[in-house]
Image (tube, rainbow, N blue to C red; front, top):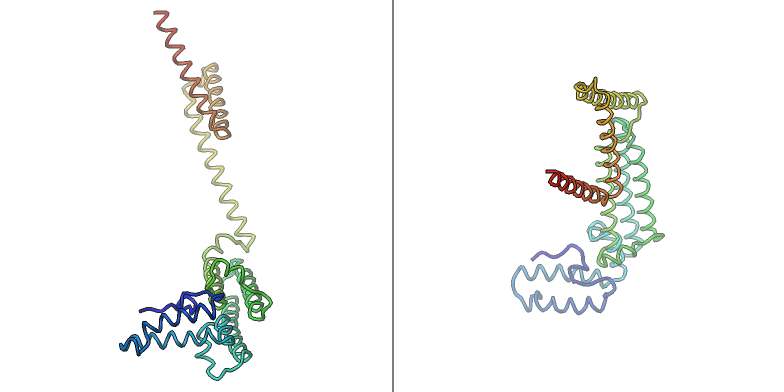
Length: 269
């Protein structure tokens, strides 16, 4: 049996249901896995795991520590007794983690290529550290998140922030060369290529149009008719983009004109 890593999910309770809801849930699980009720070795391991989580959630200090730093802190700080001891240990772990990221950012700044994304990496890092410090210090909370995810702990939320930062940094590394241009020469070159492409397409279109009109070069009246029809087609296409009903109306008019012309032809014959 796989027990969820989140203590609240393991007991299928929310923080608001501690301690009463937790007690009743633990009693039901004890009936299933207590060694006196279930002599199997696997059941004994499951019961010990549940009892360990139960003791943490029933202790106000340990529950607050678990919410803030996760279960790993109990293994890292076996000598901790008070909340201040746990807070000092947990804060040190966060300093080591964020310090490692800062060192990597500085190294990448020194040896990596700059496409304008390094500034935004430092901005995101500063925001992450400030927000994280405010949560640990109690100046900010995640109650708005718990409205949608009641069992989410602060430590799990901070892990999500860390993963989000890493993913955004990777995305910036991939998209940076395409988005940011830190050299005026590169920008001028790209604009020049774009301008030449537009001129080439325009010239090609003009040549094709002139070639299509060559058979009518000496027929001025026919050229005027073709030009008028081209202008009408252009206007019709613009009107259809603005109002989709215009196309239906134009089709209806053309059908009526066709029927009218057909009837006139039959009448003449």
